[in-house]
Image (cartoon, rainbow, N blue to C red; front, side, top):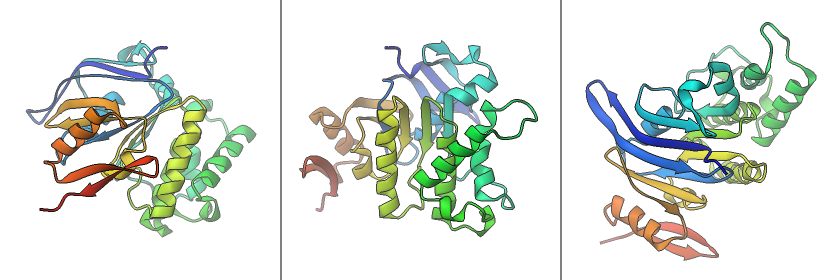
Length: 255
């Protein structure tokens, strides 16, 4: 099976400063991978480069195809993007924002089809945002807005989803809802790559990419002791990873 996303010698320079230093990375299709690391490690830059949102040196492939060989419309169908702090028109109803995720599947000047409406409804219900579908985005709280943006990402129905801090502003029950949604996406064969600051949440993924100073220090399964040692090391041994009820948790290390 071809990797869902692949990078070779990925380098990004912003304002004269090298942010990513020749990263090699291959992400298995149908898996959930988290990117973790301290502030300034280059996590968000990595996601943006893989999504084709930043100029880069090196090679990026989606589903085995060079990124520069994929047209903009096909890119929009193949990959769904959710970034941090994305601007959203304050005067648009939530349902209309989610419908924007269907644009890559619609013809020019075409009205949304019955299928588009069904996909949008399903996405709003999956994220718990259905009750305020008619409210303007400017009237929503931070958590409500985030759930609408998650719904927009789901509505694209792309084989690969890239999310930068998707749990921002979500309370614990809705963080659990997001985890369950990721499992459903995996069951459909979709690939999810997410940047998370919550190490405990990241440890529920299939694998993690551990970054520091613009480099990948480790990439491996969460249950692998080498992965756990890499996570503890990149955070200066200030956390310790322990098993709990068949899962892994990260706890502060005192003293």
